[in-house]
Length: 222
Image (tube, rainbow, N blue to C red; front, side, top):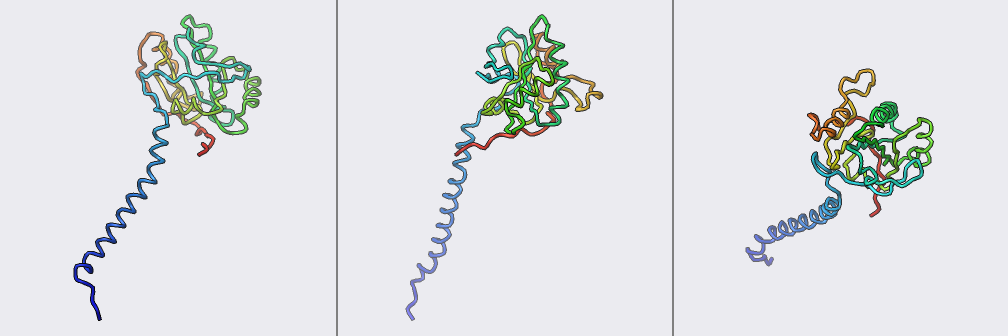
């Protein structure tokens, strides 16, 4: 029987190992490349002290188009990502109404803006209009149909709050207060952030964990 040269019998396993390694590296690159591309397209979540993302021509329940620049005269803007379908958001509606009334006539000018980015039938614009009429919302309630604003802010929950100062820098994000039970609230983080914005300072607490329902985004088409 003819035997292969000793050198061939020794190196063949190494060639197989080398080929497997190359296939592994190529496969890993193919898997990670799309993820890297998505990461490059995903906007950076603003940090405390950063200029907050704006919005333009979001349709409100009043039928008008709204932009952040419409509020240039305000000393502070409270942005809350909310929804019609989340029980937590519904529980906070009366607190939102009270917040708006508290600062509606403030000399410094404080604005409350609610944004709905949820991809649920109950959160479509016509349903938002029904909810706004039923609860008599006097603050702006806007539809973020493309989810672009929620993604730009890095919003995850409803309700989730953000406070912007006169320069529209982010000075607070998180929960409205320290308890989902209105009767047990001892600290209003939003009030403290608004007071800090008026004084031209950062609040002592700039970030807390929001509590609520996860925002549902529509799937992006590839």
